[in-house]
Amino acid sequence: MKGRALVTAYICAAFAMATGNLVQAQGRDFTPVTDAMLQNPDPADWLNWRRTLNGWGYSPLEQIDRSNADELRLAWSWGLERGVSQTTPIVHDGVMYVANPGNVVQALDARTGDFIWEYRREMDVRRRSAAQTRSMAVYQDLVILNTVDAHIVGLDARTGEARWDTPVGGDQEGFTFSNGPIVADGTVVAGLTGCGRYRDDTCYIVGVDGRTGRLLWRTSTIARPGERGGDTWGDLPLMFRAGSDAWMTGSYDPVTGLVYWGTSQPKPHNRDARGTDGAALYSNSTLALDPATGEMRWYYQHIPGDAHDMDESFERILIDYDGKRSLFTMGKLGILWEIDRVTGEFGRATDLGYQNILDVDSRTGEVTYRDGMLTDVGEELSFCPSTAGFKSLRAMAYHPGTEALYVPLNLSCQTVTFGPVEKRAGGGGGGSRPGRTNHFHPQAPNQLGEFRALDLRTGETLWRHRLRVPYNTAALTTGGDLVFIGDWGRHVYAYDVRHGEPLWQSRLPTMANGFPITYAVGSKQFVAFVAGPSISRSSWATLLPADLVPDEHNPRGGNGVFVFALP
Image 1 (tube, helix red, strand yellow):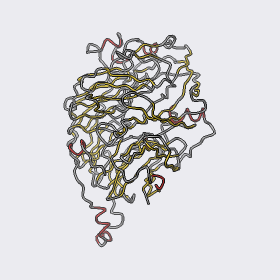
Image 2 (spheres, rainbow, N blue to C red):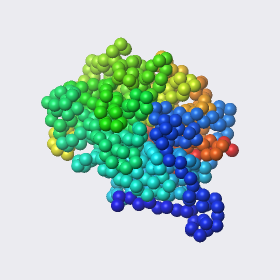
Image 3 (cartoon, helix red, strand yellow):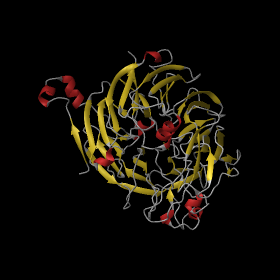
Image 4 (cartoon, rainbow, N blue to C red):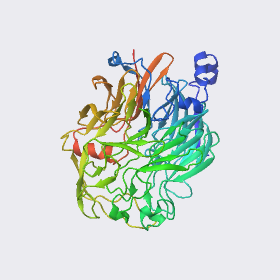
């Protein structure tokens, strides 16, 4: 048995039977989560990664607003396991489900923070601190967990017992999950990572039955030899076609009936090291999949043949406006892409003006590398952004009232020499980068963090803030005309969505991280932030601050969930 559930009644059963509220805490009602509920969630709940299937990161709750945000106080907190913590709490029927480092899941009373149950997946203790999942999903009476050993597990939402446990990584070692799934009309859809290793297989997006866990399909994120797009890898055999990880969670449109998922760069990162100058499909693409079959209906490749580790794998936000059914996304380059989500046709690309690697044709979306930006192994190159990216896993949010996107950015450049990668089974990876030097961006000397509001229609900047340290969480927008975000320096903020005025801030024990949420229990609204470290030696949250702002520090401990409310 892969995991076990520890179920508590807070105190012994005899005392619980004599105390009504404690019996209710143990045996509280649970309303099964249907597809209809996922498509139109109760404002009080936060049912998946970005709350709604369209990826907005928006809640209509408005009890906390511009007039009272400065009165927010800590309502309760809960310590999490040690290790990497970039998680998203899930809330339904007044219960919070939170994924800890080490594939530990806990259920808490969302009003008080009281413990209800715990699921602890068995694994080598040496892997536990680095085993994270950034989100989960809930469907019917199950909490859906993606695990570090490439399983998808359905946990009983009332008790934490594993109902089913499905391995989806095939017979190849090294595949893993770092993000959670999305549920699309009963199918649990999830994207694998750990795809940089040379093996006789590719990376996949997978679908399993949400009720039984039965594996339904696996769709390769790399074009195989002899298949559509296979020639974009030149004559490389399957063994040496690596990368195109699907490591962040996608979105779902029940009208088009399609799931939209982003993929990462091909590996190795340098074309010369990779052994082909082709487009390397389906890397750095948006994939539109039928959730029932996994069929790829269309794809749009944002950066053909990437040569600088410029991910385009992050959130896909689905917005209807002016008769358009659009998909918006932004990758490391800081280019906001708009794609027709029905046809996959290019709509628009808005470059924030910080990158110096390539140009995008405003009419066609065609990408052209600038002179001197394609190098061979062993040649030094300076470029912006650094491989950390201007935009990364910190998801942007949409506010329907302002029709604006709120984008966490971090500004840096680098000088690097890409090294060779030995072509052998079990090898691979992104490639070595000897002599890497990080730099502040010339347009933001001595500042790393930027938070920017962009007009949906024009891409025009409405307002922005800059910090010396990185902005380190996703953005969260609310019906109270607020946008919440946290930083590497342990601060959490609420800004006015319309003008960017800072209205509230507090401070956590260690860096704010992950994906803040808001929810309600009864008549009370809460805002929850997560604090905890990022992946060791990861460029976006570890290397850059240590290198460029070495006087700023975070304590080694302090992982937790911190929940705020009005008095």
